[in-house]
Length: 233
Image (tube, rainbow, N blue to C red; front, top):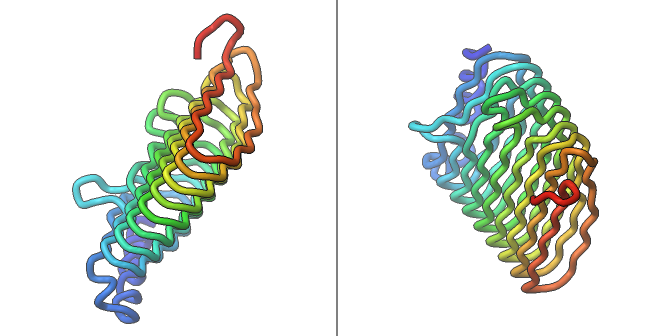
């Protein structure tokens, strides 16, 4: 399997070189893939796009993976690790320029049956996704869509059975979310506007925290805490 994946990478890079040699020469892919029934598709058409690096490779481990990565702009980068993996199904895209996506999934526990669809269209956005680095996150299902420039999205999930649907449309928004404690947490959010700073903490150990956020406006600061009664988030 490992040799088959490496051969696939070589063929993909060669095909890109044939169609657009000048654009493809500065793109790079560094992935360690161990096992599982993986199907991996990679597309990089711009310049200076990276998946991992020679000193910090993108790590994938096992189980029934299906990973589809597209970066058509310039200077996009995907970093991180997915360990143990289980039945992950990831679709990642960028399209714009200088977008950075950092994964830290399953570093100390299983990723389980996670599904992620991440679609970024814009430039200079940064997404930081931590899942199962301290505790299990069984059955997480995230769909994240970011349309705009210079947005920062940070998500830390250490609770089981989380299902989020997020949309950010605008520029220079900062969205930070933490989910740990009781299983079944969910944040559905649509943010439209520029320069907003939104923080969501779902840390109840006794309750199923859920919230639906719809926000339209510019330059607003919103903090939402869902935690145990009398406790701190």
